[in-house]
Image (cartoon, rainbow, N blue to C red):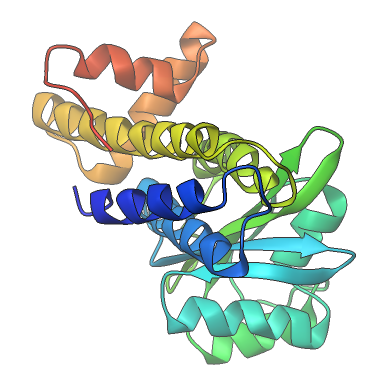
Amino acid sequence: MDSEPNLNELAVVFGRVRGLLLTEETVQHAVDLLAEAARDLIPGATGAGVSLIHHGRRTSTGATDTLVRRADELQYELSEGPCLSAWSTSAPVRTDDTEAVDQRWPRWAAAAASMSVRSCQSVPLVQGPTTIGAMKVYSTSAYAFDEATERALLQFAVPAAALLSHVQTTETPQQIRTELTAALQVRDRIGMAKGILMAQLGIDDRSAFRELVARAEDGGRSVADIARELTEGHGPVEA
């Protein structure tokens, strides 16, 4: 997988700072990798970003491309937007069409629309009682995200928050690497499960994702659990 060199690099850096605070450079590797994983996980996402926020200010940020980076920067320049709202309310926030008047963030929505960012789904990164930041996906299409993609991003945000919370702790490098590997494995297993459903049912990627979510809801289980069942016997998912 393409993520293997990044994981190896992270492991080397974590080994050097065992028992110490992670450096700014190390954190950047982590947030960039998680942003890429979020983009790959969510159907319809053309880009993704991850921000660590403390007292309303970013301490670290990761983005998959220049468009995402600029859309994020605008939120902090204007002091409004879905990422800041998800962080401040500790709740998921979605905007379906930035070209429509959005009374929550009128300046950010107008600026984002001028850059061809049409929709955004943002979820908080929560660790214990603290919201440490937000993860978001962007699309150049309106109405690209819905409740199903929101739930999937929320599920992915759980291990992401667990990883990033160690930025200000003395947890061991192995624990950090294990959690990051687990997060990437969930992403890859869901992708494999979607491929299986697409082949079995003759449906597209988005419909396959909705089928996964529907099966999870019917059984009162997680999407990851359903994906694991579907992919058993199809080879290991390695990060």
